Amino acid sequence: MALSGEQKAEARAIATELAAIARSAKVLPGSLTSRRTRCGRVGCRCMADPPEPHGPYWQWTRKVATRTVCRWFGADQAADYRTWLSNDRRLHELVARLEAIGVAAVETDSRSVRRSRGRKPAPPA
Ligand SMILES: [Zn+2]
Image 1 (tube, helix red, strand yellow):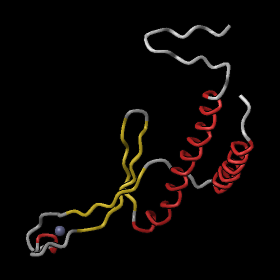
Image 2: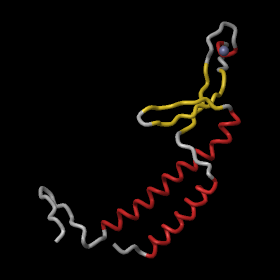
Image 3: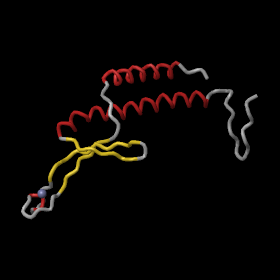
Image 4: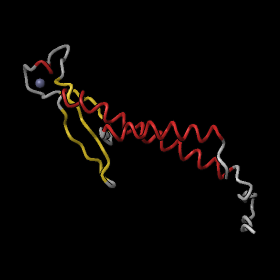
C-alpha cells in the first residue's frame, strides 16, 4: 500500500494545480459548440449563392441528471467562459490521475488477491 516517492511527488503537483483552479473559482461543466444557421428568408444572405449563414452562435451544453441542457452564449460570453470550461476538463484529468495512483497502489499491494480465471477469489486471510 506504500506509495512511491514518485507517486507522492505527482500527487503533490496535482494538489498544487487543483488548488490553483479552485482558487480561481472559474469552473464550468459542459462544452461549447459554434453553430451557423440559415433563416430561410428569400433574399437573405444566408440563402445567397454562395450562402453566408448567420452566426456563429455559441451553444453551451451540459448534462443535468440525465438531461442535456443548452443555453446560447454571445461571442463575448463564449470568449469569457472558454477558460472556465477548460478548467473543468483539467480538474477531471487531475482527479483521474489521482485515481490512477490509488489503483496502482491496490495493484501493487501484496494483500490484494488476484482473481484467477473461473474461480472466485479467496477472501483475504
Ligand atoms: Zn438569413
